[in-house]
Amino acid sequence: MSTLTELYYEIAKCQDCDLAKHRTHVVPGEGSENAKLLFIGEAPGWYEDQAGRPFVGAAGEFLNHLLSLVGLSREDIYIANILKCRPPGNRDPLPQEIQSCQKWLDRQIEIIQPKMIVTLGRYSLARYFPQESIGKIHGKERRLNNLIVYPMYHPAAALHRGGLRQVIESDMRRIPQVLAQSEKFNEPSIEAQQLSLF
Image 1 (cartoon, rainbow, N blue to C red):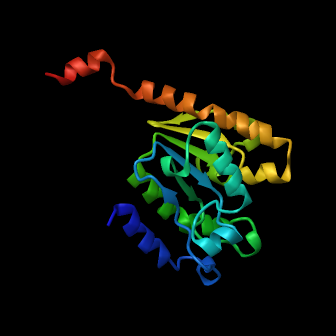
Image 2 (image 1 turned 135 degrees about the vertical axis):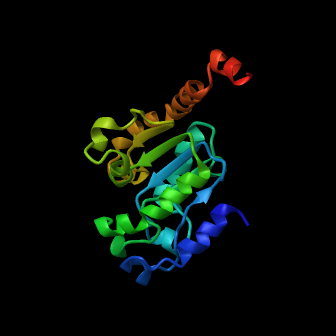
């Protein structure tokens, strides 16, 4: 059993907030354990709660389309949410729910060790840059130690505001370039490689 699968069993037993009383299924996340790209959304919706999988509704279909624009599929990446259980009526996450659930996402990131995190929407953006606005910093990568954080609008935003569709697609198309640059940046210099030989 993989480390992530063991973690899923732990998440499924979680009773740390009231959302556990209302869920049909917990939605831990899914994808490659060796993913370079980790996408973080907000919370499961109705379809996700029914299926126990992230991004399976209309927003998920748009996310699949976005991935296809850059030659990726869901098997190439990892997808998780800030919350692992659906808030009733798809309401916004509450601060105490985010705090209760934070440890699960922390452990997923620790296990996967992605090169780049793509935040989808304002709640996952707030995890890293709580004072920033998605409208101002979407599509602009920032470095946190050895990790690149790349903010994007949530795919659902395009379903409610059609004008955002092209903006989101444009931001998505930059991801391979940003990832390639970050990997180049992280390569040890020739001098460092030579020093490591001694």
